[in-house]
Amino acid sequence: MAYTAAVAGLGSMGMGMAKSLLAAGIETYGSDTDPAKLNEFTSAGGKQAPLIDVAENIDCLMIVVVNAQQTKTVLDSVFEQLKPGAVVVACATVPPEFAKALEAQCQQQGLHYLDAPISGGSVKAAAGAITVLAAGSDEAFTQAQPALDAVAEKVFTLGNQAGPGSALKSINQLLAGVHIAAAAEAITFGLSQGVDAKTTVDVISQCAGTSWMFENRGPHIADGDYTPHSAVDIFVKDLGIVCDIGHSSKFPLPLAATALQQFIAAAGAGLGREDDSAVAKVYANQSDIELP
Amino acid sequence: MAYTAAVAGLGSMGMGMAKSLLAAGIETYGSDTDPAKLNEFTSAGGKQAPLIDVAENIDCLMIVVVNAQQTKTVLDSVFEQLKPGAVVVACATVPPEFAKALEAQCQQQGLHYLDAPISGGSVKAAAGAITVLAAGSDEAFTQAQPALDAVAEKVFTLGNQAGPGSALKSINQLLAGVHIAAAAEAITFGLSQGVDAKTTVDVISQCAGTSWMFENRGPHIADGDYTPHSAVDIFVKDLGIVCDIGHSSKFPLPLAATALQQFIAAAGAGLGREDDSAVAKVYANQSDIELP
Image (cartoon, rainbow over all chains, first blue to last red; front, side, top):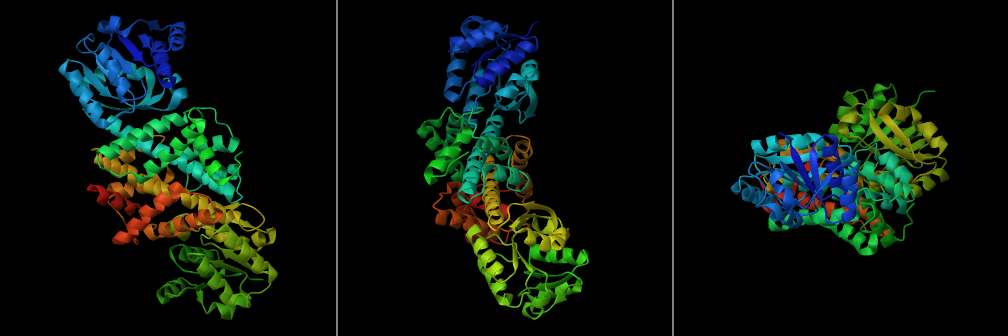
């Protein structure tokens, strides 16, 4: 029997994943509030229909929206129509407790649930090569397998119930956000000491102070190129989620909270849609430093 | 003519460097306030004498102490006795302005000065394989070359006058310190969300949230092994220097300042001599988390 997928949310990640499903020969419905996104997807061979009308035919619903609230809204909109045995693959960055609650709701209805936050960026999404931090029942993994094979280069199997996928995603975003802000802090600090940005990037990339984000985002700052690969607004959101989890768990996160303030300052300065490395402009503005 | 070196400061880095000079066949004097260190060095074939008595024979004086003040004290103690053409290789983490001032002082006396902070840790020091972030005149580099060849695996040539070496070292320590604290914050945060430390280390090492320090120090936390490779006190000192430079330059460093507070909290809890990854215990104590 044919396997039918749907992707709710055709943003920079969801669009690439939906097209990767098509490329794998899987019949795929796309859903988005933006007609332009829907047109782009149907032009690529995707199917378009109100999800509620086709929900009973869907084997795998991938929800690739921005947060927990949107995830819940999408799921609730088709919850009664999804067929028993279908799997809901929830890809947004959400609190682990939220993932557990949604899994329980799905299981009561005979649906499988995969706690499956994603990373890798839009380029990897378009190439069917994202990383999935996944947790869920064996049945959820089995049911999602054809879709995961189509969209992912690497799938971490983090447990047999929801929660750890979202937890690991939050841990990763905590580090990623702190490291981007730290790269911006270090490179602009270097400029204040007379070291040009390219020298800092070249030297530190070979020293113990390096990070994945330093090596990836540092050149954006050194080149003065803030074309958004991942936007400032994403870290305003994701570090916000991280800090909310810490808050509700009574776990203090001084570095994540500090980095969040720098991204909020960047968004407040009108840089929300620029590349997240534009947080360097916050540092530059505070200290009258001229960036490349 | 034979080349004679001296190493002032036989700590975990200086001792390894001094022994590497011996291993390269260079006659080397050692100096330290701790008689046990001097004995260790002479047992390894090193020479021992008050530096002031042998200064006129020294071609290269490597000063491997903990800060600017000690560097100045060592240099002043033999300044009048050093012979013209000798090179002073200053390896401590110091403010760039301090390095510039010391270079000027040396040049007035006909001495060469190499602004040459080091990194790599005690294991690399023992193997003659440290990294040197060096800046100075061509003559300073030439005069220091035999010693650099003996102690270093990599020498960055960062400019023809003092300053950039110390600046890059501060930039590196800013990032290294923030990344260690961030690793501790992330791993303990994961524990608060039910993710064991080993899983966090294994998964994040393969994700965009990784850093050199996360991969190096994370296993210390996951293994509960706080044997000091580099101590908490080092980052209390080095992030203190970084923040002092920022302060005097009127350059705000919110992440470095926050990380410094976490290392100060660790030192305040009596952990100053433990491995710097013991900053994780600050997070654990604040949130009633049990570390491995």
